[in-house]
Amino acid sequence: MYVVGQYPRFLRAHWKFLKTVINKLFEFMHESHEGVQDMACDTFIKIVLKCRQHFIAIQDGETAPFINEILYNLNSIICDLSQEQVHVFFEAVGHIIFCQSNRVTQEHLIEKLMSLPNTIWSEAVEEASKDVSVLTDSEVLRNLAHILKTNIAVCKSIGAPFFPQLKRILNDMMSLYQVTSGNLNKAVNEHGESVLKQPLLKTMRVVKREILTLLSTWIATCDFDAAPDFSLVSPSAVIEHVLGPLFSTVLVDYEMNVPAAREPKVLSLLSISIVSLKEKLSPQVPSILNAVFACTLEMINKDMEAYPEHRTNFFQLLSALNRYCFDVLISLPDSSYNLFIQAVVWAFKHTMRNVAETGIEILRELLIKVATKESKDQSQMFYQKYFMTIMEHVLGVVTDLNQVPFVGLTNLAEAVCLLFQAVESSIEVPLNSQNPNQQNVDFVYESVASLFNTHFSKNLTDAQIRVTIKGFFSFNRTVSKMREHIRDFLVQIKEEAGEDTSDLFLEEKEAEIQKVQAEKRAIPGVANPNDLREEES
Image (cartoon, rainbow, N blue to C red; front, side, top):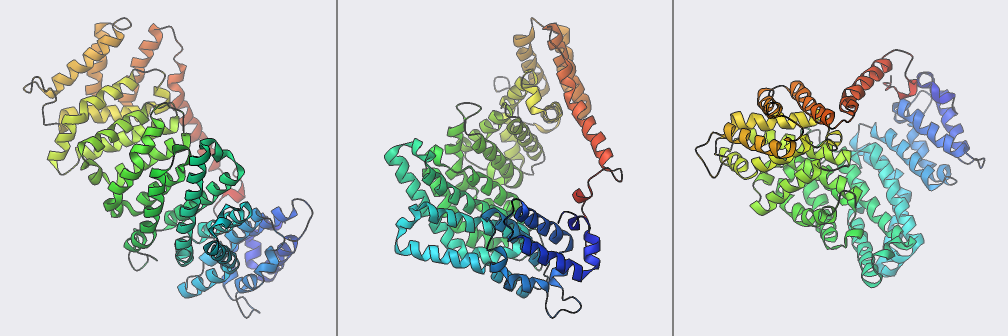
C-alpha cells in the first residue's frame, strides 16, 4: 500500500492498474490485522488527491465512472471501518465528487454519498420528535456526533457545493442545538458547573461543537467574492437561510449560558462568517456584539489565563470586525466603542503571544483605517477621544522589557510609527484640552517626556530620554529604523540594570532561520515529494 501511493503519475497513466489498486484497498478495509485498515484509508485518500479526475471520467472499457461503482457498494466497503476511518473515507470520496463540474450530477453524487448518514440522522431525529428524552441517551448522542463528523469530512473536501446537504439538515441541527443546550443549562442550574465534567454532558457539548464546526467549515469554503454566475449561493441567501436561523439560536444560547458552558467555537464561527461575508454582514454586527462582546469580556478580563480558547477566539473576532466592518464599529455608541478600545489595549498587553500579536495587529489596522477614513468628523473625534490613551498604553509596552517579546519588536515598531505619523499628519483637533492652542507635536512630546522621566529618570539621563523621544518622531516613516531605535532604547535600560540583551535580537535570528529553511526547501530533492503539490494530468 505504501509503495503504490508513492507513484501517482504511474497510476494516472494506467487506469486498470489504478482500479485494481483501489479495489485491493477496499479489501484491506475489511482486514482485522492491526493498522491495516488505517493504512488502507490513508492510502486511499492519498491516491484520490493525486488522481481524483480519473474517478469521475468514463475510462476505456468502462460504461460508467468508477465513482458510481464506489457509491453503489459504499455500505459494504465501509461496514468494518471504525468511525474515524469512515470519516477519512468519506472525505476522500468528497474530493472525487468536488471534481465533477456538472452541478446536477455533482448534487446527485452528494445525495448518494450521504444516503446512509442521512437515513440514520432522520431516524434519530424522528425518534427525538416523539420522545425528546432520547437526546439524553449517550449512545444516541454519540451516533449524532458521528453523523455530524461525517458531514464535516465531506464538507471539508467538497466545499460550497455541499450546500444542498447542509440545507437538508440545518433545521434539525438548530433544533438539536437548542434541545441539547436546554439539557445542559438544566443540569448546571440543578447541580452547578462541576456537572459539565460528567461524560453525558461532555457528549452533549461534543454534539454542539460539531454543529458549529460543520457550519464554520462550509462558510469558510464559500467564495462570496466570486461573480454571481460562479457563486453557488448568494451572500444574501446565506445570511437569510443559514445565518439567520443560526444567530437566533446560537447567539441567544451563548449569551444566556453560564460562562463554563459557553462554546468558544461560537466566536470562531462568527469570525469565519465575517471574514467570508465581509461588509455584507455589517447589518448583523450590532446583534453579534450585543450577544457575545460584554459577556465574553467579563469572562477573560480578570486575568491573562482563564478561558484561553475563548480568549483567542474573542480577539480573532474583534480583528475580523475591525478589518471588514470598521464603519459599523466606529459608529457604535461611545460606551460600546470605548469597551472595544479597552479590549484592544487589553489584547496587546497579554502574555499569550498569539493574543498579544492579534491585539497589536488590530491596533495597526485601526490606526490606518482612521487615518484614511473619508469622514473627517469621525476620524478627528476618534483622535480626540482615544489617541492619547492609546499612545500611553503603547509606550507602556515599549518600555516593558517583559512584554516586548510577546508583542514582537517589528509589530510594535509599526504601531509606534503610525501613532507618531498621525501626530504630524492626520490629527487636526487639539489634543491638549487644557490648552487648545498648543501644537499637537509639542503636547505629545511633553507628555511622552513626562512619562519617561517618571519611569526612567534613575536609569537614563535627560539627554538619553530626549534623543529617544526625538527618534520616535524622526523615524516614524521607516519601520526598520524605528525597530532599531526601540531596541537601542531597550538595550540602554537592560544594560543599566545589568541584564542580558541577547533576547532583543531573537526576532531577527528566527527570521534568518526561516529564510534558510525556505531556501533549503527550494532545493530539488531536499523536500519530501509527498509534501509537494502535484498537478493532475
